[in-house]
Structures are given as structure tokens and as C-alpha cells.
Image 1: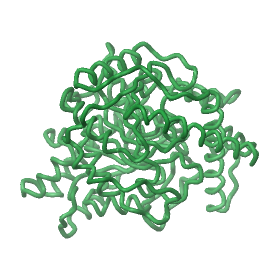
Image 2: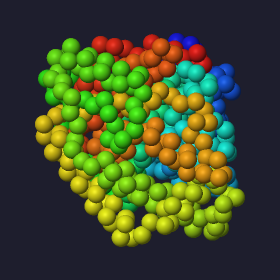
Image 3: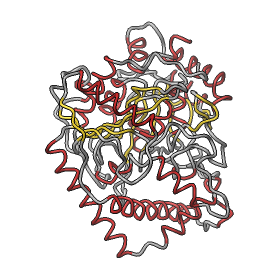
Length: 470
């Protein structure tokens, strides 16, 4: 069981294909790990053990991840017949009657879902501390946040419960917890994975993984054209799994020590990005300190408007779907404050914000004519203490502001639709992981996977074990 805990999904699937393990054995081992470790972690908020055992015993297939245990985030990932709460008591009794398209594709890929992971209410924050389920703790230090909103998934992968887990990202929610928990997190290009209508264009679906090759192979399995998407990514030149191990060539890498908006960046995060820049240079890449040129206030203001309006629309859509109003006592104080903030956005202000996001996209597109990749810290600070991104009743938006400062590096790529990844290359003196972020041109996950595999080979991270783990 302990050997399986630290195998990636590709290796586990290979055991099944070669007849060295059965899906039932993989699933039972994952269930045992969840039962043993999750009480200290609170990453898995709904077990699906009966469903997993039934799937493991089903007729065999030649799916790429046949028999591999997997977790889905309790946000957007609808599973027919099981509650979907999105971390909110308001949705406690909602049960979808169809699978989300992404969930259906994950199941078709052979993955066996053993549970659902924790998320902040409606995925709003960059920490995973919902009132409904309580906080997920960081496996490297239980006093600290996992990040969010895919904090349950990242903690589960880091602790060895499963080799990879579903995650989504509307302002950094794949990359933030990947950085906090020391795992690999890729946000794909806008429209790469099935999502459906997303008026804001901010949200992307994928996963957090222990290895680069798992992320690439999973994206191959789930990212076929989906007509209902509001955006569509350009088709890749070859399978993403084929990029892993492929020579990246001599890349032009820009790096920045400062955030796209004016916030203080912790010395550990500066040290991590400087270390990554030096590593890229040693690997033969051309490295230069540079950043896209745009007014920071345009990014901050435009993202704030589009994000808060999108959250408000999502919450009101739930109200309409359930046939009952959202009231202040039905949701957390911050969620109510963001709902009111989003409702107050005028149509004219929203259109100006979209115009500013197009200008930001143009600026980053021009920047990537000079550089293949842009390297920054993933976050402005190491994993923050639990409770730091709080929301006192007298000022619930304080948590929103602290969250924006902590996550200052990640929203830009949601605005532009570019792919970006958090890579766990550095740990500080307190043994906390500090991720670095690489962003690429729109549609160019291939370059990210090639470089990520090179970095993984040069400085492997999968062997690191957090104190709370299997």
C-alpha cells in the first residue's frame, strides 16, 4: 500500500495493464490511505467508496488510466445522484441528475473516483476553509493553508492519498494550492477542457498531479473538442504526453521578482524565482529579467469587476435553479459581500472591464513575441496561516483584499486565457513548498510540458514526503 501511495497515475495504470495489480487492489489501497490520513487532513469531504468498488469490478477496458484512483473537487464537477455543494450550506441538498462532461471524460479515461475534495464556498478564496466542512490543513504544516480553491485536491495528492485529483482555476485555483502543497499544477489554455458556457472566460478545468507526465496524459484524455464550450483552444501539434521528455530547445525565458499589481513579495518567493531563473540558465535557456507592459490598476480593477460579477451571476443562477432566494444567513459573510459587490457592477463598467482585459491580452501577446515563457513566483508569500484570509462580520471583504494580495501573480493568465503552471522546485527553511509559475503563449501547453519535464528530471520533487502523509 505504501509503495502505491507514491507511484504516479501512469505507473499505477501500467501495473494494471501488465497484470501486476488489479483495479480493485489500487482502489482498496487508496481507500485505506484516505481512511488513515484524511482525519488529520480534511481533504476528502465525501467518500465514494461504494461507487469506486463498483467501478473497479466493472468490465475491463483499454482506457489510459484504467483502475487508477482519483478524486474530484466538490465544485463544478457534477456526479449524477450525489450531492454537489460547492462548499456551501446553501447547496447542501442539491443532487445533480447528470455528470459534468469533464467528469464523464475522466471516467472514460479509466479513472475511478473514490471521493470529493474540499473547496471554499463557491470557490471564491485562495484558501480552503469553508464553514460547511471546516478547513483542509496543509500536509507540510497543519497550522497553514493549503491555498484554494482546489486546496482539498492538492493536499490529497501531496499527502499520497491519490496520484492526481481534479481541480479548476478561475483566478489561480489550480496553481495556488499546487504551490502551497508542493505538487504540479497546470492551468490549461482557455477552452482546452470541457467547461460549457463561461461568460467571463476566466475559468479553466484540469487537475493537480504528482508528476508532469500524468498532467500531460490526463489532458490528452479529456481535452477533445466540446461544442458547448464558449471558447475553443487551438488543436495541439501532437499529443501532450509526447511533449514530456521532448527536447525543449533553447527557450527565451523572462523572469520577474515583482507582481503584476503593487504588493510586497516575500523574500522566500523572490529567492524561489531567482533560483528557478538560475536553473533555467544552467539548462541552456536564455534568461532575462522582463515583464509585460501594462498599467497594474487596469488589471486589478478589470479582474475585480469581472470576477465579482461572475461570482454574483453564479450564485444567482443557483438561486434560480433551486427556486429559493439567497439570503445573508444562507451563505458565508464574504460570499454575501461579493454577491452584493457583483450585483452593483453596471453593464457599462463591465464592458469597460472586458475592454481592459482585451488590452492586457494584447500586451501579453506582444510580450510573448519576444519571450517563450514568463517566470514569476506563483504566490506573493509562503503558505499563510489558517485564518489569515479571514472575513470578520464588520468587514467581510478584508479576506477578499488579503486574498488578492496573496494571489497577486495568478489572475493575469485567467484574464488572457494563457496556459500557466506552478512547479514545485523550492522549499524554504521552514520546509514549506514555494512554487514558481511559468506562463506560455495562448495554446502552447507543449512548451510548458517540455520545460516542466526537464525541470522535473533536473530537480525531482516527487520523493519529498510531508509530515502528514500516507
